[in-house]
Length: 108
Image (cartoon, rainbow, N blue to C red; front, side, top):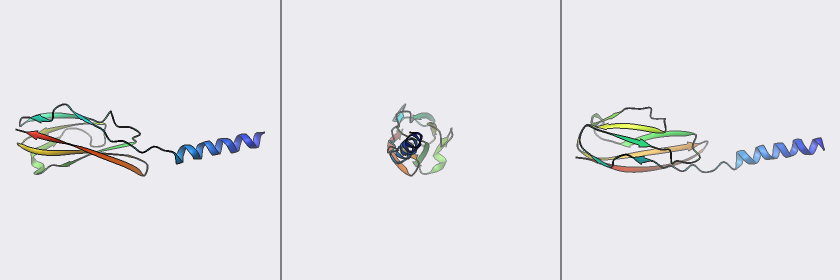
C-alpha cells in the first residue's frame, strides 16, 4: 500500500509539470489616443498562466518615449513625448512557452 501511494504521488507531480498551460498575453491601455506628454498606463492583469512579463516596443525614435516602470512587471507606464503612432507589445512566458500581443497607440 505504501509503494502505491509513493508511485501515485510521483505520477501526479510529473503530470502537473507536463500539463503546464500555454500562457495567454492580454493587456489594456487606459488610453489608445492621447496628446504629447501624456502618460498611458498598460495593465496585463488579464493575462493568464504567466510567470514572466516583458514589455516591448516598436518605438522610434526612442527619445520620444519614457518608460516609467519595471519592464518585467504586470503594469507599465509610458510617457509619450512626440506625436506619432506607436506599437506597444507585451510578451508573456511560463517556462518554455510564450505568447505576445500588441496595441497601437496614437499620439497627437
